[in-house]
Image 1: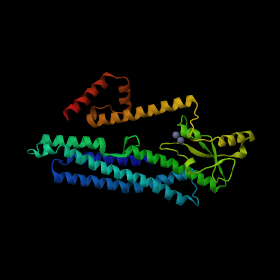
Image 2: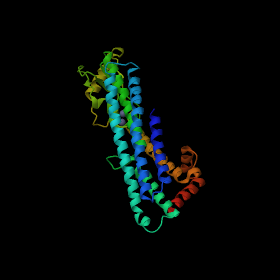
Image 3: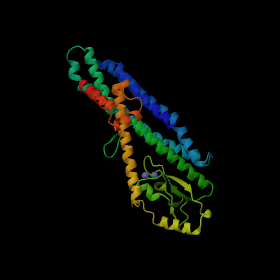
Image 4: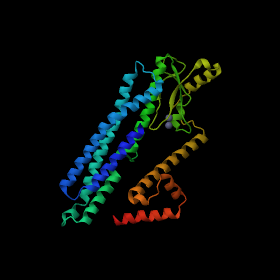
Length: 331
Ligand SMILES: [Zn+2]
Ligand SMILES: [Zn+2]
């Protein structure tokens, strides 16, 4: 389902590129028509997500309740859906504004050239290349992080949707526990993990807050704790456990402090390594996308082939690098 949304967004980018390359951007009327068409595509995307998102949220929530529709379900699903939708619609609006801005700026930069003399074919090509390049760099960006990184719409939407699916599933679980008279939950997840998630792992919380041996599960303590967090709540079945274990969990709950990094060194190291590998992967994905955009069929057929080539610094890779640079000089 998430894939479907990504496909729609990627298609949008292709459609925009097609419009930018097929309209004569040196002509003001044509350029305006192209932009109107592009803006209509963004508006359509806003409508498409209204079809795509609600079933995704519903499915995730029901995965949490084990398929059961509860008294709280309708309200929860509506609220969760509204939240994702607000996020995505804001992202689409930003991408739309940035696309408009990038096209206008690119056209502005080639203004002098446009004014001088007739629009020759080579001039048109140059203008098109400029507009496409600027759009490619800034157009589809939808979100600026606190450290100034611009996130593309597809990437941002993927993270928002994935995190909200996790959120909906956890919400479903908690609602199901409440409905079935189960008050205690324990936080679980994958390793290695960040310091914040680690602080919550294995900690027992009381959903109602009435069990004073544990701390109440408020919104802040319910996973996900950050974008892409895959932590989840599980039932804490006290009756099935030895008393000594329960006592240890009570002490653990007392010592709960999300501000402190209590990870052992090996987990810290493994987590940092995983983050570095994620960054490398993302970097390579982008480099490959740039190569496909520029070299078309001359680029390696798959991302995997590209990575192998790049990591082994093969002759073929160096040749492709040369072709990429050559393309830069010409435009
Ligand atoms: Zn985390
Ligand atoms: Zn987490």
